[in-house]
Image: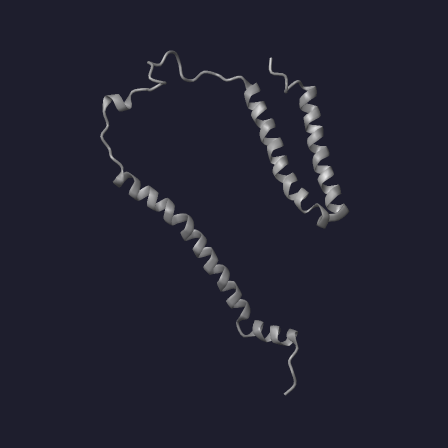
Length: 140
C-alpha cells in the first residue's frame, strides 16, 4: 500500500465530514460566547432586585451634595474647552498605546513597520498643528 500524500488525506477528511467537524467547533464557540455574556447579565438582572435591601425613606430619596443642601439648578452648562482637552488627551493617550507595541517589535518589523508608524505619527502631528492653529490648546 503506497503512502498517501498530505493533500489526499486532507481531501478525504473534507469528504468524510472534516469540514463539518470544523464548523461544529465554531458552533460550540458561539454557544459558549453567548452563554458567557447572557448568564452574568441574566444573573445580575434577576438576582440583583431579589437580594438587595429595599427600604426607601424620605432621607434616602433626598438630593445629596457634599452634605449641603443643593443650591441652584444641577443642569448647568459646561464649557466645550474641557471636552476638547479631554478629547486631545484621549487621542494622544491612544497614540502611546499604539506606539508601545511598535517600539517593542521595531527590529522585526523592518522598514515597512517604520514607514507605517511614521505615517501614523505624521497624521497625529497634522491634527495637533490644526488644534494649535485653532487655539484649542489655549486655556484662557
